[in-house]
Amino acid sequence: MDLPIAPRFRNLIGPSFILLGLGLGSGELILWPYLTSNWGLGLIWGAVLGVTFQFFINMEIERYALARGESVFVGFAKLFKLLPLWFIFSTFICWIWPGIIATSARLLGEVIGFSNYNLLGICLLVFIGLILTIGKNLYKTVEKISSLLIIIGVPAIFILTAYLTKRSDVVDLFSGIINFGKLPENLPIASFLAAFAFAGAGGNLNLAQSFYVKEKGYGMGKFGGKITSLLSGEVKDIKIEGSHFAITDENIKNFKNWWKVTNLEHLLVFWFGGVTSILLLSLLAYSTVYRLSTPQGGVEFMIFESLKIAQSTFPFFGTLFLIIGGIMLFNTQLTVLDATSRILAENIVLTKRKLNLAKIYYISLWLQIIFGIIIFSLNIGQPLYLLTISAILNAIAMFIHIGLTFWLNMTELDKKIRPSVFRMVAIATAFLFFGYFSFKVVAGIF
Image (cartoon, rainbow, N blue to C red; front, side):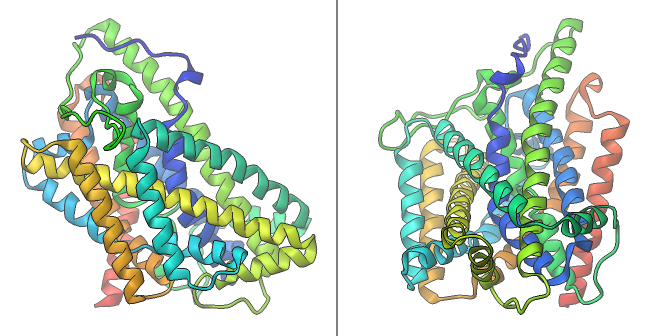
């Protein structure tokens, strides 16, 4: 079998928008602005480094999917049969905490004057479930929503930031970018790790890139199946195993073309979009509420930030900030539920091959929504607390899957399409970085 010919760049854009959307509502919109609003811009180097690490991590995940037309989870199961159980456990335990949609409900509730945020959060979760269940082609539904909201949201934040930021604030931002390795003395290491893990998608969600690559038809993914709607589409059984392409000079040349254009797509959309979003939102928080009596608990600082924006401009712009934030968080929760449901479904199928992937996807989706409703009903924790728990757990999960992905590509792929020395060094550095900070957090707890 031959590898399909790589198309033009403009036909490839899509999957990276979804992965960017996974990070925009957690690290970009909440955690990094929260840190900079309380501890300043001297730590913003961590955000740039975090997104950069995730660029290299994501591309190694994409490398395997391009070459094999299957997700990395199928490859992991070939390495060790019990690994699907780990990914089921680590994905579920890391993402049952509805901190993202809780924050969305808090912001949107502030706009519409509805104070029962738990009830609003439950309604938003159910609405997401309906969107993912009814949309005819699941991938296209998620891609279109993510792309639209990012294209609208990021320019709006840029305009607000440009209007409110002073030249001295921009100087502080660039100083923070080159302030590599330095952290404020009173900064909790767990908070930094949480933000670092969510500088991008974070946790097992990075691995979902292999699903989106396959369903977009990149490389050998052209020969794979797609999950359709439970209600309006034909829920057919999908083959999860991919196929190899013959190692010929022509196919290797074609793979290099795929690698070139997919790297460019991910660099422009995910890396540049992610770094720009974090810097703009952190700069906006720094310019409006730093050194003021910002609330130290929860995400109330975003409400406080919107009030300062309204005072410095017009009341409408403060409200607009809350609306944009609430909608972007809603989109993040939607993409998170899609990604986690895909991960859970495929790994469940890998443990028992006779199951229908599409049906297991929708069961996983609604089970997660039910757990979220239960957590809301029990009123467990504040949004930022739930987000921090999720982020710390996901940082540990990232440490594990970075090592597994590297091992997979170095053992299962042909030598001619394995990572270069430069990529190997980048992945090894990310692996050690996440390992070090995960150890520090766990050691601090026990």
